[in-house]
Image 1 (cartoon, one colour):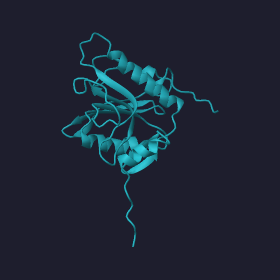
Image 2: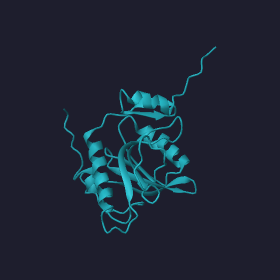
Image 3: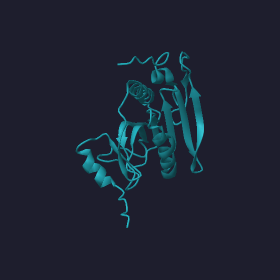
Image 4: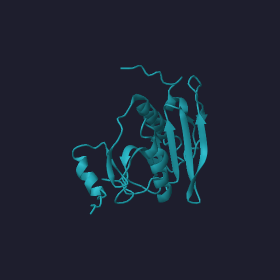
Length: 198
C-alpha cells in the first residue's frame, strides 16, 4: 500500500524559517528561493525606487505600501515570497505584522533562470484565482516587462515591451502606477547588462 504524500502547511514553513528564511511554500511543498543575482537585484531596486518616488509627489494619490521580498499566505498550502508587492493604503491603513494574509493589490516578480515556471505559470494562476488586480513580470535577461490586469476574473496583458541590448528603455505609464512615469532605464540598466564571469 502506498503512503499518501503529506502536503506541507504554513506552520511547517514557519518552523523551517527558523533555519533558513529563503524558503517559500508552493503547492504544499517547501522550496528554496533562487539565489539573488546582480541584475535581479538591480531590476528590483530600480523598480522599487521608481514606484516609491511616485508616492511622494503631490500627495493627491491615496498611496501605497510597497514591500520587497514579502511572503504572502494565500491558503494553508500556498505562501510564496514576492519580489515586490503593494497594497493600497485605503485598503491597508497600517503596516501588517507577521505573515501577511491580505491579498496584495499589485505583485511584481523578476524572473530567475531555471525558476521561470513558478512566476510565469504557478504565480500567475494563483494570483488570478485569488484576485490580485495587477501582476507584472520582469525578465532582466530578455530586458522585458509584461503587465497584466484582472479583467472579469482573468488576466489580460495591458503592457508588454522588450528592449534589445543597446536600446535605451523608455519612460512608461503602466497601471496601477500610471499617474507618474516609470523610467525603465533604472530597471534594466543603461545599455543592458554585460556580466563578467567571476
